[in-house]
Length: 370
Image (cartoon, rainbow, N blue to C red; front, side, top):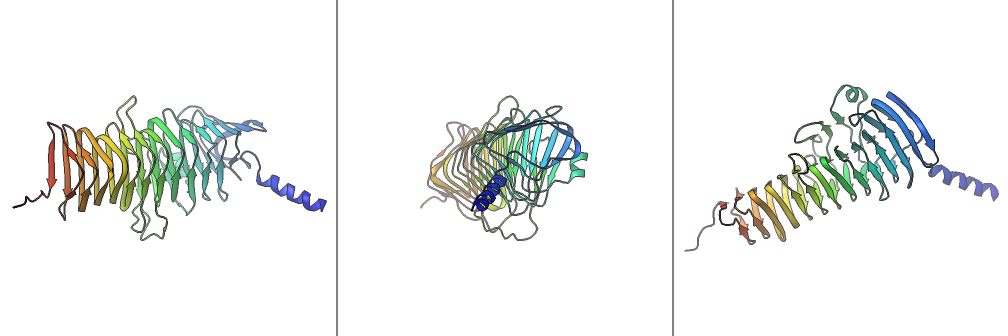
């Protein structure tokens, strides 16, 4: 009986090992400068790749990377085991977390770095060391689930997975926040759009209703939510608030791109400059969509009575190839409001407001009753 209890206790302790284990620096320079019960401090130089046997940061534990500068990058790769972050990760440089078995960032987690990428795929070492781009391949069927707080003052936050759920807070007031699903993802360091997707070849067997789900707040200079062409499932569901605001430089852009799939907007989307939506079917169930310019391209566009789309002193452009139904309010004060339904007349029940100086364009136009 005593032996049995001892065996159970050993097993339980093995399952809750603190801190990441199995440190292996395979490229660049890295050394553990501090290793205490509650955390670990690692010094790195330049581009660095660290392989871990297990990546687990428990609540109240810390993992700090001291890097040369904000431009330095360290990859943390945990292959063959799911990665868990429930404590804090900090760095003056950029941190990448890779795990092909899934990534869970818990509610108690706090990540603050000069840039953060998490992905349930693979990164080729040679490409990473020789290029400024980050290419992520071989996205399996694992999930990336964030419930914590991830923030960066001047960098970017990008999450990549086959199935991505954000129920935490993402904050990059001077950079990009990107959520991406695809066969292959290319992340470029510069440009108005940084995420480029190679679709899955042929039909996909993904039976999940949504590939990307957002339930909480996203604040960034530029937001990109992009997924591959997937005719068998909806792509993006937004229930939380997404805010792309101009802070210190030109920005305030929001991109929702899901060609061949559906986008369902159930929360508020705000941008100071531009909102671009591209989908098979676009549903505006509730909430407010507001920017200087708003454009939506889809086969079918439906705006519910509880939704509102506003383009302040700019352009509001809805282009439906098959049909457009407007039950909520559309507003382009002193700007231009276009509702285009190519194959059928648009169905309008909501309000259309262009102010005193605005222009309203409905195509095809309504036929007047005799």
